[in-house]
Structure formats: C-alpha cells, structure tokens
Figure 1 (cartoon, one colour):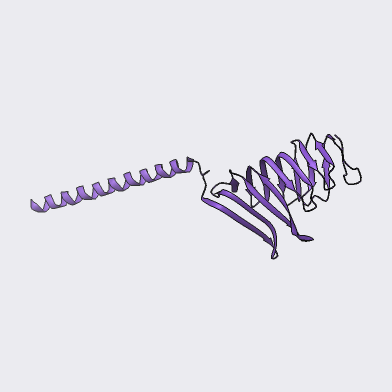
Figure 2 (cartoon, rainbow, N blue to C red):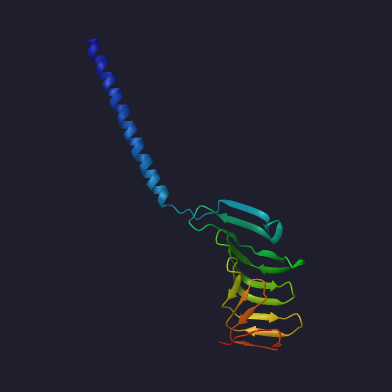
Length: 196
C-alpha cells in the first residue's frame, strides 16, 4: 500500500509541473504578442547639450549644437529630433573658415537617408553672406538640394532683398537657386530666377 501511495504522489507532482510549464509558456507567448503590438516610437537615447561633428575624409562638413536631442532608433525609419531647436554650421572646402549657418526652433535628421528638416523661424546664412528666412526648409544631402514651399525672405550680400512667395529650391552650397513667385529689390546679375 505504501508503494502505491508514493507513485501517486510522484504522478501528481509530475502532472502539476507539466501544468505550470504550459501555463508559463502560454503566458510568455501572450506577452510576446502584446509587446509586438506596442509602439516602439520612443527615444532610445536622450542627449542633453548635444554637440555633433560630421566629417568627410577628415574634413569637418557639419557642426550642430542643440539643448536636447532624442534618438529614435527602434523604428523602421530611425531619426534624430531636436524639439528645442538646433544650430547647424556647414563648411565648404573652398571656404573652411567661413561656415554657413542654419538656425531653427525644431529639427529632425534622418541619418541613413541623409535628409534634414528644420521648422520654426528658420534662418540660413551662406558662406557668401546671403541670408534666408522662412518657416521650414528641407535638405536632401544625397541630392545636394535644399527646398521649401513656404515664403522665403532673402537678403543678398549687397543688401538687395527678395521675397519668394511660393518657396525656393537650391543647391546645398547655394551656388544656384530658383525662387517661385518672387518680388523685391534685387540685381538680376546675381540671381537666376524662374517665375511660376
């Protein structure tokens, strides 16, 4: 009799452990499914008082500073965002000591695509001293193009002014640009324009 009682306790313990295993396994699968549905759009890194330097073959092409930068790396199209503004200096190899500048209240950078967007009181100063003011600007670094559809206010290095009501497109070194639906006091010798 005692022998049969020991066997039944072992069977009960075995069945109990199997039941716990299956319960835990099913809970783990449920947690995995639930976590897969949760948003991954949260910053994986937060950098305070950020200072970024970008180089190409040892030459500094870009310097950027921001009060706070958040990196979103866990999503399909990772990006960096500066919600409290960003100050960018960009350098030309021909004029390395005179950087151009972009200042904005908000900036987002898609590093892999090399695509930048800046919004909110955007101010651009080129290496040549031209000044541009608009509400948003987009920079496709791969295509070497800068563009916007917002109104652009331009002050040239000689003091002449221009208002482009329907935006502009330009090479990223500002050696060529096109303004859309423009008016102002400017020299046609310096500006190649198309009215649309």
